[in-house]
Image (cartoon, rainbow, N blue to C red; front, side, top):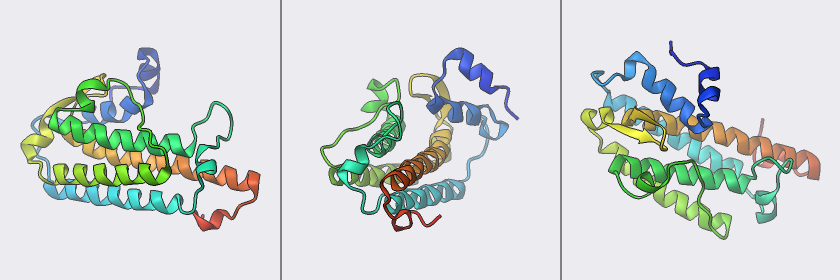
Length: 195
């Protein structure tokens, strides 16, 4: 399927954030001449939006203290994960419009806000912006290439696809961190994650 292996990425020092778009860009369906279905783009955005809504369901009733807790000193906190997701959403919108973070941020990062409520407001605003931008893309726009976080060229459609996988992957991470917190501090996990 792909000419890249996990070992290739490790040898090149490629960050995990670049693996998915590189893989996607190497697939035949994403060649420059491939026809892109706007219905598929809408489906991807609907699925990403469902993950976004589910993320906030998994964040229900989280405290500021819990948001900063880490399962171990080397792990990310929930606040870090959500700040990173917000950063990526801003980066994708800017990449499509060729401005802002796309021109300055060459490595994955995060946005910081003083509270989770402020972070959510910022995330909501950029999510609306990115959805609006993506809903106005043409097949030609989707085939246009951008540099993915300072590493490899990918078509814009790969950004739209990566939004979904990125959101889903980090949502799982939030569920893991909160689940671990729940076991350590004896909170009710079912309040935010029925699994």
